[in-house]
Amino acid sequence: MSRKLYLEDLHVGRRLHSKRVTISAEDIIRFARDNDPQYFHLDEAAAKDSMFGGLVASGWQTGALSIRLLIDSADPPFAGGIVGVEAHIGWKLPVRPGDSLRVEAELTRIVLPRRHADRGFVSMDIATYNQRDEVVLTQRVTVVVFRDPARAGVAEGSLSAD
Image (tube, one colour):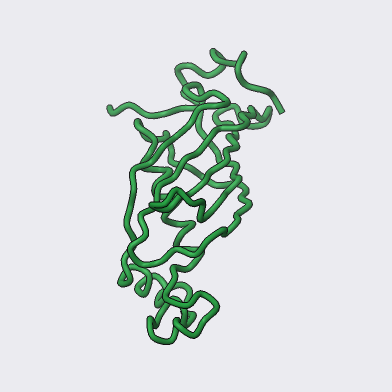
């Protein structure tokens, strides 16, 4: 059985750092065609007349790429995946073809709900950076993280009950 990351492995202040992914014009257009068909995501020529002055990725695409980078940054991976509960998103700068994105996240809160002994809630602040280290997206999220059945209750000193 492969190793998994459980709630007991986490602590407030832990940081996650991702690799980079480069987004192409084709990636932007493909995502927009399926999910956010606005002209400044679909047509390079027409996008020149938009407030962006050129083709830009959908903010939702940037968010999805950010979550993908976050998931991939956890080694080992989170047991049961990362299940979102709440998110506050800020789109700071447009993402353009050729931009290379990376994510940094910091765990800010861990809560053990009394009604769910098998899981907890982890809050984290996430920033997505482009190749110039400019923040293009911020997220403050709360996600479900599962407890290790073999260790549940062992690391309670670093967790808060809610």
